[in-house]
Length: 473
Ligand SMILES: NC(=O)c1ccc[n+]([C@@H]2O[C@H](COP(=O)([O-])OP(=O)(O)OC[C@H]3O[C@@H](n4cnc5c(N)ncnc54)[C@H](O)[C@@H]3O)[C@@H](O)[C@H]2O)c1
Image 1 (cartoon, rainbow, N blue to C red):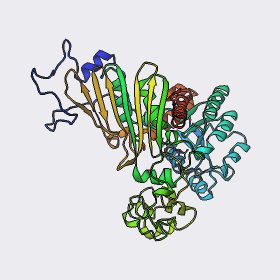
Image 2 (cartoon, helix red, strand yellow):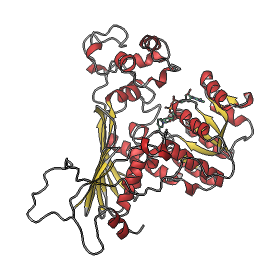
Image 3 (cartoon, helix red, strand yellow):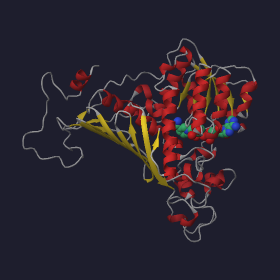
Image 4 (cartoon, protein in one colour):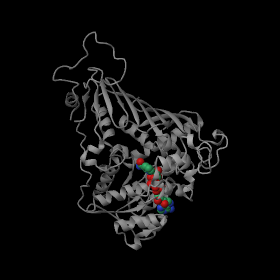
């Protein structure tokens, strides 16, 4: 749709003139609060070009899942949903029960059930692609090996732990002419697709700047970045990549221009030993006198609120006593640790500012002290403004000042039923399967080249946070 037709379709222009201009002498708007008189317009009819999650392929694509944990199961789940189009033919996980469970579910023969990832590559190539959903420090080596053996790769983010390794993966993908899809799933979420479509079609004129915030819900922070798998930046990646590479990618994608420079700051403020309340033992389960009042209590988060239970291998048993038993038993007892007594170093607040080649600017904050997640985004353009909270957004056009809201629920979009991350998980999987079947990387929303670009932004941000200097990207 050309821009003028698009603007007409959202009611900003009529054939000859602007409509709905505020009346002469109307009161100056004082806030962004939506009118409660039902007068806000709707953008829900925007055609986002969404289509069925079923891959359009002329043959079945075969995949090996390396890392049968939570992300591996998301992609294996996709294969179960569309068995004619995609089949899991091999599984690798060092946890035998995880490997067995996924293998049994997909009828994987014994000779294609592996422990460590390296075993997969000791046998001749037997599938089209591998899914790499191992921990962050085990992306680089299996990806390099898979590409050299001629596999296409669905690679969980972050791509790798250093900029050098990221660039080596890019070079390897080109050298062997293979497809690498990085799981920047938010690009596939209808909310972000709608946001970007409006910007690209000129609904706010020229984009000038963006304010973006990623709140990490406080218990999610404690679970993943204080007690859990991503607590140590040296073993994984700095939190700006581990948590926020999605956000850098989305900024780059919406602004549609390479980032020139970035400056960042932030630190670990709370979760360290000097902040432990008097008498707090090393674990919440060791009779901590503060347990009842501490928002970060492991007993509260896991046994009462029952959040983040996927790490406890509960097989559906959500009984509080059973969960408590897990919290007392290695290796799960690492999640019982007091948040002030963990071996963590990830910042709990992180701010950054970026300048893009087109002159646009963006500020990005990752904040750990928030009651809920839900990315907040404000996009400032020459004729309009967009304000979003991760599930709905409002467009304000300066010519009409009539707010227009996009608030389609992913659960009500039939094509996206059951797909996590705002609908993005399975849409990404669909495009990957189609790209592999056709050997055509252009079927992906993001090539490996662009995915690496947003990682380079993250590494530059981390250098800046440590050096206190603005970094070129
Ligand atoms: N795209 C996203 O939005 C998103 C969301 C969450 C996590 N992730 C990323 O996905 C990756 C996996 O995260 P997860 O939450 O599924 O973790 P997880 O711990 O649930 O799964 C990882 C699995 O890898 C297995 N594993 C470990 N070492 C192995 C080895 N040597 N060989 C084979 N298997 C091995 C583990 O046993 C585990 O089952 C991480 O890199 C993470 O950062 C991405």
